[in-house]
Image 1 (cartoon, helix red, strand yellow):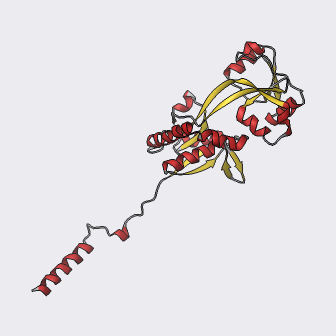
Image 2 (cartoon, one colour):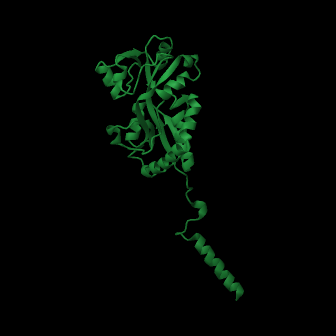
Image 3 (spheres, rainbow, N blue to C red):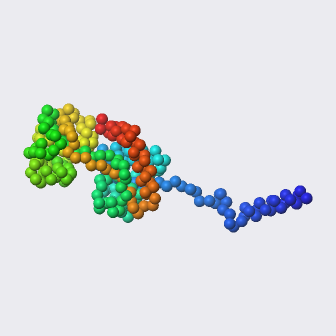
Length: 260
């Protein structure tokens, strides 16, 4: 009797194992964690490319936010036009760092939390600080060195066009800094962090001072492709981490590694 019952149970167990409606654990599809695809454009010190390794202030901020959220990501760099095309077509999940424009907002979900702020500052030879009170009128007639093809923002561009300020084009930012240090231009306008990054290991730093307040300030964000899946959930999770990082002083800590 006991032997018959054991045989019956054994047959029943075997039937369950070979049942076509059952998937054995060994045959199951392995569950892989999603790796989010991010794009960026070289722009030291925010995004720095060295031997195909992507570092920089904002790159490190993005990596830290994803690590804190327990998410995996892969970052690649492309020229701006190609990167924007991939975001538009949903061929990548997100891109950084970007200023807000209505045109891009048509195919991107912008983050709520900024990654950084771009301050356009005025730098002058040491001891030659103009009486700047934050208004362009207070520095009327000042010569400002500007990298060729570079916009300093709508208010400064308008100041040049209206004759309030005098624009002197320089070949690039580093050339402008050298001209400034030797007093060949009255002043130089540039993004604050880019300027400090160039001066970090230079003896010219002792000959130049930054005038406060900044000429203008613009927040920069992550933009998430509207064609990529589940990016609103991703945006919200990363925004939560970015908000905490701002409150905890993480942004300042990362930034100082590149400019101090």
